[in-house]
Length: 360
Image (cartoon, rainbow, N blue to C red):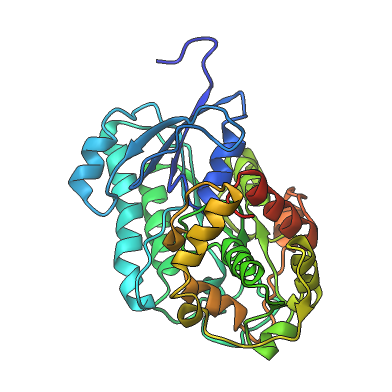
């Protein structure tokens, strides 16, 4: 029960320790008017990156409805939900059912627990515009017509809107793209993949060569700093202009790998050489022992090699040889003005990884 000094709102972050969830948790835990609980299949860390205790956590298999209902039975005081859980599958078609089920089970379990939701923020992404299919209309806008599925974001949105109408809560869909943060174990974190590739290059004494395609080297791309996304989440939970709206959220600028790559090489004290396209899933398959040698030599946290990066995802990103541009005018006109230079964002996150002893 709330007391006069208790936070007025209780936020549940489902998917609390992926690349997006980690940043959201670290931002929201500092907000005095909010109580925070996280939920995910994996356990929470003992403490957050800044050394503060991790908030209350529920470890639960979100794919099992009855398990979620039991796990959420004590969460009747939850007032708001941020959903950023993700289940990776081999195909887009196969990804629809599990990703919709996790959202459905979360909403159902909170309702059965007696929670009176005020607002739900759903984290979507650029696949809503078909960017995974090839060249797409740019700049992509929230008002663009839907793409033909299978795209699980479409199905999640349909479910969210139906439940919101039935139960009377507000909603916001945020669509980041190319999220960069410092979380490990997330299949959708391009930065840790680039950092791991650079660390291996450093250990082998070879120049840092861009491993993607030449069209991707020159294309105009975009990114969303996970910390910026967290700020947008807090804004969306309370701003009247965010209620029942979809917003693109990126850093506010664009970048080309050919321009940022020399800065990454400099960070690792490596010379940058001409791009050399390669399949990282193949090239990195035998590097686990080499990574353990790096960990031992530099006194790094003993992070398993397989948790550093999902190489098929990194390959996909670094071989996207066309412009990826989403318009962010709508969210700015609605009142959110946060932005960050992407080159600065990359440097800061690499430094964070180094300070946390995750990379040399």
